[in-house]
Length: 126
View 1 (cartoon, one colour):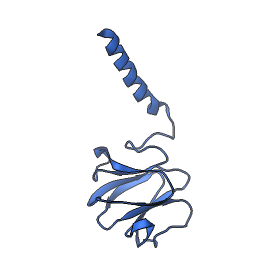
View 2 (tube, one colour):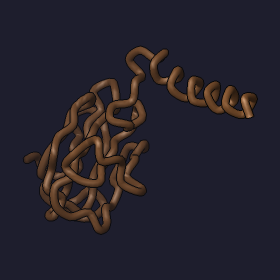
View 3 (tube, helix red, strand yellow):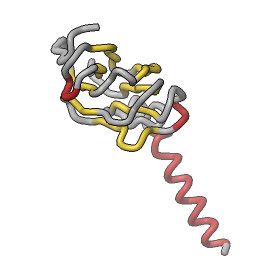
């Protein structure tokens, strides 16, 4: 029994030691460094929504995401995420979130997000 407790304690230590040893690569509210995350609601401590982690540049369609949600852009190097009213990164751009920032957004009018770099926004600027 004592061996199991030591193994469990060792496992927990390994899990908590990983992020603590990172420097600028720390996840923000559980959002992995380099990703964009959409949370269950307006509270970033609510947990990341199922399927709500996006890594690749380009458009990503959203489904069944209504009301206020916390959107975290934990990308780096000037990467942005734009919230678009149409599917496939089209329509009017509602908000542009710069790398390293997150805030609450009403996703009712949002049907897709687009990740990218530079000044080449797929939706029209807000």
